[in-house]
Length: 160
Length: 233
Image (cartoon, rainbow over all chains, first blue to last red; front, side, top):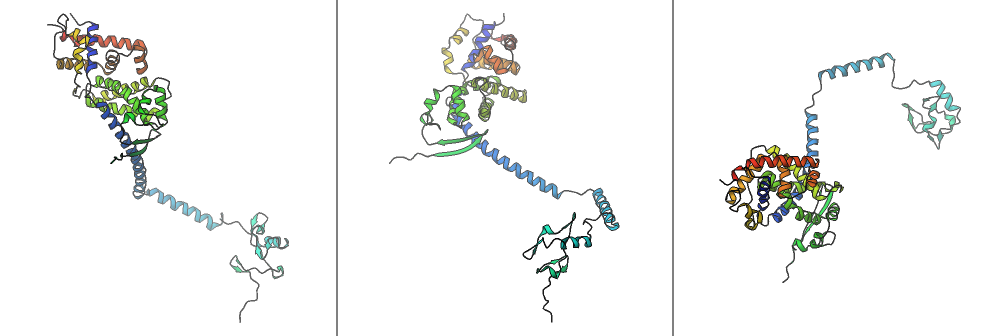
């Protein structure tokens, strides 16, 4: 004859009496507090160390970085193309500058760009291109700058 | 000369909660909480209030939740693992996880159901990882068992269960339990040992009540076979 279901349940209910030693739950609570504090500390330390290790990894990757051979060839090819374009005049990094037109423009402008002996950058426009104005002695100013590599001062040189 | 109490103050962040912990040498039972209430007052509060206080960073409210539920959670985990050390580790992990996750607890279920669900899931995962490599490490029977009506009935001479000493009884019971699958063991533990109703078990496991009943039926049938040797010879 087998145990009936009720007897099985009665036996199982006896397991209620399996108990941890007295004072166990108080000690376990202390341990929980300790672990939570330690966990919080170790988590923040771990985060910090993770960031640091990522940084270390980044720099070590930089050290161990190897430039692929094809990159050298590619860079040389780009250099050749740019040099060819510059050399043949197909492309120039600086805009072309029409000296005659630009000079006329500033002289017609009644020294609008020259205020208190200083040249305003807004005056350095002719059409759509930036230019350097040409200043004549009749402009009644005393420029003290060297523009475009040429002295523009008209003070009497103190030469002997 | 009056003694100066040692005051330990610590502050840390867990699960997005800023926690201030202050120990001042006074017994925890009369220590005022962060909100100015004593532990006795906190013990009178409902779970919802304790949870909201914990969410606000009052660790003593969480301690009260520990006092209320740790014995039940321990029992659940212990009866699913049959190992005191594993149960101890899991108990701490369950409460630590609950504390970290409590800021996201919306109160859709009771705290009781919620923490049971955490415990069951963590224990099922643990037992599946542990596999068959484990040793039983059993707690002693409480001496009150000798006064238990059911125990007296079971060991009476006119029952089919033969008289066994307690340690043998414990050994056989736990061996029989460990032969069940961990899912069946969870249901048996909650229903037969902890006396939880089917509906509550269904909520904890997130399964229909019918599933709980069928698991129980199957588990009882298996246990009837495993415990056959308790029949009086």
